[in-house]
Every structure is written in structure tokens, then in C-alpha cells.
Length: 223
Image (cartoon, rainbow, N blue to C red):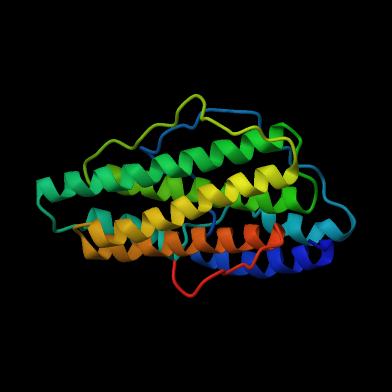
């Protein structure tokens, strides 16, 4: 994909993504992630500076989406059994977020990503961390224990940047579909509505990755 086009796409999508899930510090009760090789936050230069500026946003107050998720969990009118079922669903989503975070870190540590793709990967990783934190906070407020990250996740043989993008796309598609499924299964409808906002962001991630791979960003009218 042409460099300038990717930067323009990433910058435009970032405004939508950040509006849906802004930066926030990790809440109490959220699990500590394992630490695979970290993506290097290299100093941006030239044409990549625009992407870098959105890829590493400064911490801000919790977004409306994250706050709504937390508030819905805290005020859930569900029975104890229903809350337990919702915890299991949310923990399944947390597992997916853990894997996405680990994968972006591992890919960056292997130095397979080049600017401006690296900058966009940093942005996506930070948003998966925000999803994990908001979901973990919701689980705690429902009386549960958030799912913990594994020390290591299985990866295919990643040799090129496109290999990384293709695998990341697979994970983002799985995440988006998991949130759609969760919306129909969560007992608390306010919680389901808030979780849907996270699924929207995962779909945005997938569309950008498809574009980067030279595919149609939205290949069909129905998933």
C-alpha cells in the first residue's frame, strides 16, 4: 500500500478509534500483563510523524465508552447467576485482548514492522490495552476475577511485515465477531450495549489491516 495513503487512512481512522475508546490508566483489579518483547517507540520523523502522533496518545480520562462499560457493570440488576454468566463472557473477550496485545508486542520486538505500519500497530496495541482494562474493571464490579494473560501465545511463522498484518487481521476479525456474539448473550443489556462499542473498534482495526494488505477494507455487506 502506498505510504501516504496508509498514513491518511490511519490518521482518519485514529480519530474514530480514539473517540470510541480513549486513553485511561489501568484500573484497580485489572490484571498485570506478561511482558513479551516490547514494540519500540522510536522517535518519528518526516512523513511518519502524523501517524506517530496518534499512535502514542498521552493518557487521558476514561472515555465515555469505557466509563459506560464500567457503570453498567456496577449498576447491573442481574441475579448472581446471570452476573456469573456475564463474567464468563467478558473474560472470554479479555482473553482475546491479551492475545492481541502480546502479538503486537512480539511482532514489534521481532522488528518486522516498519514505519508507518509500526506506528499504527502501537495505536492498535494501546487500544487493546484500554479494552482489556475496561473489561477487567467491569468483571471486578460484577464480582468476578479478570482473566489473566498467558506467559506466551502461539504464533505462526512470521517472516515479513505482511505475515504480521495477515495474522493481526485474523485476530481482529475473531475479536469483532466475539463482541457481536457477546452482545446477544450478555444478560445485562446496558452492559451489552457498551460492549458493542468495543466490537466496533475491532472492526475498524480489521478494515485498516485489510487496506494495508491491499484487500477491500469492507469485503461484504454482511459478515
